[in-house]
Length: 84
Image (cartoon, rainbow, N blue to C red):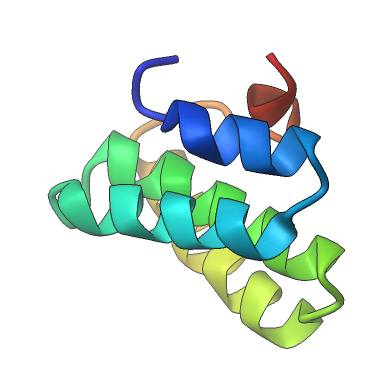
C-alpha cells in the first residue's frame, strides 16, 4: 500500500516500534485531515502505540480513526499492513 512508508514497514519488521511510529505519524500528518488515508495511518499509529504499552494514547488514536472509517464505510485495517 503506497500510503504506508516503506521505512515504517521495515522499522516495524525490525522491531523498532519508535521509528515505525515516527514515520507513520509523519505520513499521517501529510494526509488531509478527515481523509481515509489519515484514518488508516492514525489507526496504525494507535496499534503501534498499544504494542508499545502506551494503551491510553493508542486507544484514543483508534477511537479517532475508527469513527472516521465507520463514517466512510471502510474496513479497519490492522498491523498486517506493516507485515506486507
